[in-house]
Image (cartoon, rainbow, N blue to C red):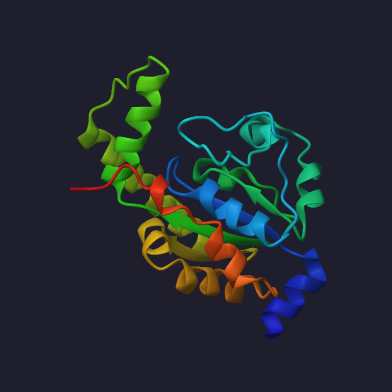
Length: 201
């Protein structure tokens, strides 16, 4: 508790990050937070489509974090939720406290979902599934290392399939982690199990 108080005094309200690999349920989680009236940092440039019919909930500035010199705009997200792909977590500025809802999903399902997205765009990955799994596993190890060793990051792991199967339990976990008075019923109502379309065999 003392640590949390000192961090709040140093950084102010935390930036709420929704993160994970692409196609791991980050958009669904942003939808859950939006449903309870939590302010989200979204620019609406990327519109909903067949792959994400409920919307992407993104801000284009996030994609350029790795090449930005001035990242002061991230401070404007304090007390708000913003979606940041896991590969860019390390690019976030150190002058904020981050509370991360990190989405985990079976890597075979992630691959299957990404393949369908690429197919719709007429694109194809040149990397084998086996190699992609290795790349993902190595990357997730680095993410775990970051969470353990950067004092301004606090994270909770949320399994995508667990949200689909028991949204109330996972919504309650997220509410308690954030320490906010969020309406769990509204979060549950925002989960659409019909969008779970790429399942591991």
